[in-house]
Length: 326
Length: 262
Image (tube, rainbow over the protein chains, first blue to last red):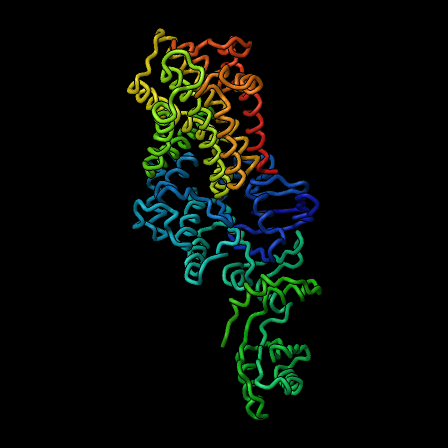
């Protein structure tokens, strides 16, 4: 449904896209995972006809996006990073206006607006201007606007960035409700967990090109899967604890961080590893302040895929918020 | 429906969007309409006098205020375009199968309508403070036409500048610059009352040409009073200046809008 080949786009001296390849099957949800500046938004803007690339081929819904722009536009929906709404108008006014611009005609535009407001639980917002909406409501309205013509392909560019956990859940539920309706969804995200929750397949991109592709499970097993983190009370016993945890978790790939009194190791089976490690610590009398099993952070995924530790402080912070503590 | 039919429909939808903004924020609309009225009353009664004006000052001032109001429309256009571009809603318009130019056509239709209403209000207030037109009704319509032509030129200049500047801070800078340029005209005082070099500059200001030409058409004081080439050919300049500005900035603005995809 989407075929991208050798896509290149230069901004100034920097190649935002540097030979990106991507294939997305009909009716699937495809996650594009990458840090800030990896080229995710640029790629979406090219696919959604907003940006002209310097080189490469892009086909969306079987149509060349450069040559058949208008036909592509009538088959896609776009949820950009920033709310693409008229903030002064009400939700209904926005949807009706967009409906008219999709050439539905006045009556059908009105009916469609009603149906979408109902579906996204915005029917009781009345005359309230969009600028008075909460972040989650705004995002839902933006999503509703992207679905006016029941697009064949829906682009979601970091749909939950900047939302609180409740807003995020709202958007996730809305996206899930689309799947099964036959819509092909391309979703970009900085959060491994988001791709994991929503996407059938994931492409990891970095510096404008795809560096890995697969299902969430395939990617996670390539990057070592879940990890266990143990924070010790006494930094002096770090080496001893590292050996013990490595032994119980069945891995030699144990990292320690003396400043944070932290021992971290990959685990195959979350619950088994957790109870084994807790038991071992008790038996040997090593006192722990915190024990948690979590998914690998985006940083760790990249570290593994590129073998190149990069300073992505922002992304580490973003993914820590998604850790699963036990 | 045909392509042309959709172009009209889409442009109308975009114009309606602006009308809906007015309906939702009537205070803003009223303030916008009241501002030139306030300036007119201030200069007519508070600052009054008018250096170098032979005859009734208000007859001289009112057409000058018409021209100034049209020129200051530049500011309104720039603010509106900048806000749209910075809010992402233009992205949605561009990702839709609508007519390419409808966003800009809607903007111009709404701004022209707002200016026409503003002009109507000023004509009413002008009449209330004693301004009259002495020419034919045809000449009256001609003068209104020249004023709206100036506004149309400011519209495309405004769209272009907003897309070049792009950021609210830079728009604020242009907003401040509009004042001295607006006052460097014959709206409030005759060029003859100014130092020679300044008077010459003022006479070549497009706004002065429109003000002088409309004074002439209305049969008001100060019409055709000057002796310089620019003052004697005010009517010609009142057409040539705006047409030249549109000829330069319309294609530039359209190109900028297309270049959003670069």
